[in-house]
Amino acid sequence: MKGWQQYWRQFSLFALLALVLTGCGKDELSALKPSGPVAAMQFDLMKLSSAIMIGVFIVVMTIFTYVLIRYRKRPGQQGIPKQVEGNHALEILWTVIPFLLLIIMAIPTVTTGFALHKEYPKEEAVQVKVTAHQFWWEFEYPDLGVATAQDLVLPVGKKVQFVLSASDVKHAFWIPALGGKIDTNPGQENKMWLQADKAGIYYGKCAELCGASHALMDFKVEVMEQADFDTWVANMKGVQAKEPVTATSPLAAEGQQIFDKSCLGCHAVAGKGGKMGPNLTNFADRERVAGIKAHTPENIAEWLKDPQKIKPGNKMPNLNLDDKQVKALVEYMETLSVSEKK
Image (cartoon, rainbow, N blue to C red; front, side, top):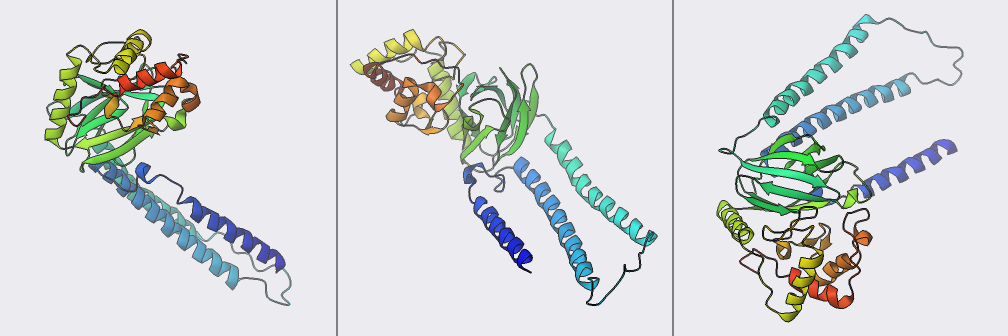
């Protein structure tokens, strides 16, 4: 009896720990609150398979418990009970039932798979090219002439056709509230479509182990009304068609000189510069630094001083800037905005 009590206490402890762990996930990265048709279809499949598995578990455990109690060894009972083998009715039953359950799961799975495999032309969907890098995301809108990084902007209620690849290693694109995930591979394009039915802020991340900072490879998704999306596109195109805005304050002007000398070779601003690093045209409009830290001057400065400390393994070198240079660079970068609110 003491042995059973010990096992029961251990089971209760593990059950309590499992219950506590259910509260450790990020609500912003949950697939249990679908906000689009793709996520809703996938959530329906999750509910169906979970219901079937729970039902099977309950039936099996009920029979198991009944047999344990009904045929347990009685006091004074001697010898081995009569052995029963070869019950064809039972064998057919426990073969047919799983087969039927698999068919029940297979039919909606196949139909959903065909629905999600559709490709939509530019007349029916916004076209977005996604390129995954260690450890950031690049988003291009080829039909709109816009490119950005880390912040994916989408119109509400409209299909978005994604073409996805990677520049270095294998990654996986995933926006839990909208649907996914799908691999992004070097030298290969994968395609998927999503749609957001509610305006607001969502978050995505890399869902494939890709290096030291895989867990930090997050991005933001901003879904806005069509009119606001059109304004954003116009602002981005307007800025990218011009020369970078000249800084107004002396400190920002000093920061611009540092940026042009040390940063522009890798980072594009207003259509000028390199593509090795994230596009910074609308850097000041982003709510996160490096995709993971709050957008504050202090966090920007921390990133500029030691990028490897925040995202180990990323490709940005330490520029060995002193405090004055960092302050000037932060001042300039905070002017890189396309938002009318800035």
